[in-house]
Image (cartoon, rainbow, N blue to C red):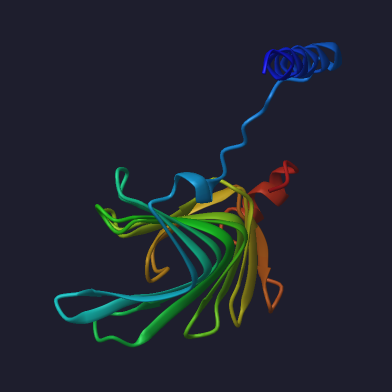
Length: 192
C-alpha cells in the first residue's frame, strides 16, 4: 500500500514538473456556445406586432442569452415586412445580433440588403434601430438602384430609404449625372 502511495505521489510530482518545465499553463477557451442559455441549429422564426408579421429571421445557428435578452445569429437571413405584411427588404449577413427589449438588430460581415423594388445596399455592417425607425452604418457602403450607383463612408436612413443622409457620397446616375454636391466639388477642383 505504501509503495502505491509513493508511486502516486511521484507521478503527481512528475506531472507538475513537466507542466512547469514546458512553461505551459492550462488554458480555458470560452466559446459563445458555452455561455449561451440556448443554442438552436437551423433557426427559423417570425416576429409579429399586433398580429402582423414584421420580420422573418433565419440563421444556421442562434445563440440565446436570457440575462442580456440578446440573440446572436450566424449566417443570417432576415426578411422585413411593411405594415400590411408584404415583404419590404431582405438582409443577409455572416452574423448578427438581435435585442429582444426593443427589436433592434445589427448585421455584420458581407451584409447585403435587397429591397422589394430592386435596390441593393452592401456594407460590412448595418444597424437597424427599431426605436428610431432607422438603418445606419459607419462603414463604407455601395448602393445601387435602377438609375444610379452611390458609394460613401456611412449613412443613416429611414426604413423606406426616402430620407438618406450619407457621409462623403460619390456616384453617378446611369445617365452619367453627378450626385448633388459633386458638381460643385468638381468645379472647385477639390473632388468628391
